[in-house]
Length: 318
Image (cartoon, rainbow, N blue to C red):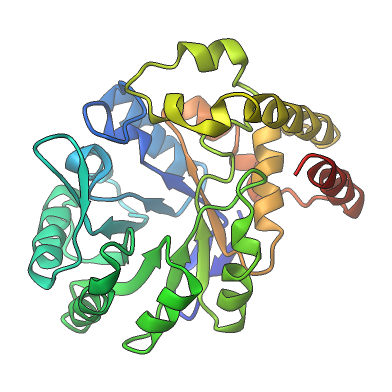
């Protein structure tokens, strides 16, 4: 599997990494519905066996449960993958999530992540969301200190704007940015991706398949059957009038993928990876078969004709 250098770090990561948002399980504000831990562990091991060399998670996923499952899955493996996790999101007693960037809380979060992941050092520690905005400088300064102390190897951010990246860069270099980027969410192309390319900031995009919407497995009937605990049941992209457009896009991706013996999800990922600013893509999986069905995207190169067909669709149905 192809590997690319992440920004100016010494890490060369596979173009696909395993995302673990969904394996956090049920019972928190941004859950994907119920999840079996044994399925999660099997999925993690299958991803690593297929060559993926990094896992992305966050302390808020399942209120720490995702990190716990990863720690269990990696116990006893001779070769550990890179572990990327995120901080700054705290679950509240009423079920909501609060953004916190105070130094003391970030240090407390890191210790919790280290314990759950059963490791001494985090390879990439990221601010999950730039909230509250007025505390970005304190939060980023804290991550820079944690790097100096050797508790984390590299530091990055997620969901930052260009202006927020500039504020962070004035304090300490940003190793990577994690923005949403897909055929459904293309806003990062306007300013974020060009800025990162110019400033040698690695980019690991999330939701390149729009949280399963572009995989070919989503139908109007399945959308209607999503449990209320699945955040996607409340997302406008999974409802009309957007749903019909997005499923038509999936049909096009299916047609393009047939010539390569690839599925629509793999085409969607390959489209995101073709951008010169993008280092790699985070791809979630809840079962081994889901990882098997998308891993081929890592080496899929779309032709100019393929990209033109996709471009025509996006122009006709923006």
